[in-house]
Length: 178
Image (tube, rainbow, N blue to C red; front, side):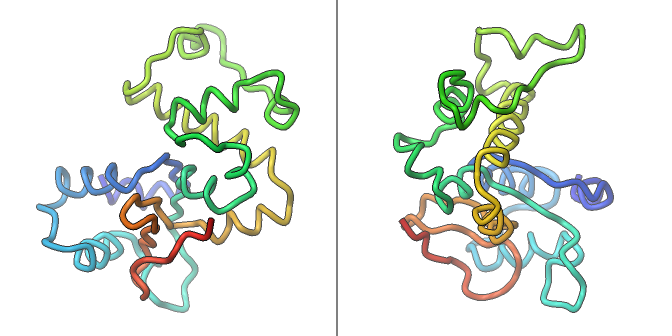
């Protein structure tokens, strides 16, 4: 699984996805290490270019929950930032910020566009996460997009209200500014 992710050279968009990566690691690679430091090192080693080197990062992960907390979107999205709550907010056609970009489905592939939600169904959650990312990137200013670049490979972590940077560099946790 990890080899396919790396070979694809695609960006990975997740929402609060640290546990998703820990689950994937433990089910497709090996048992989780006994601590975060070892997990970070081992996880980082799965992706060439993530270690300290002269080469640019090949693998890019964007965590929409982390991006919300690092940009002005945090003032707009004040409630709990569950996938469903953020998705519902970005779908609000009355919100001038989020209504500027329209997302549509190809004919015959519109089952996720209907009003009935299917949260916690993997495909639906993936659709919602991509939807949120597209709306967020379209909404924030160019200056804020620079902040998003600094969010690459940082995953939101509820632990001590800090995030988890997955590239193997110290410090392991960076304090999230509020």
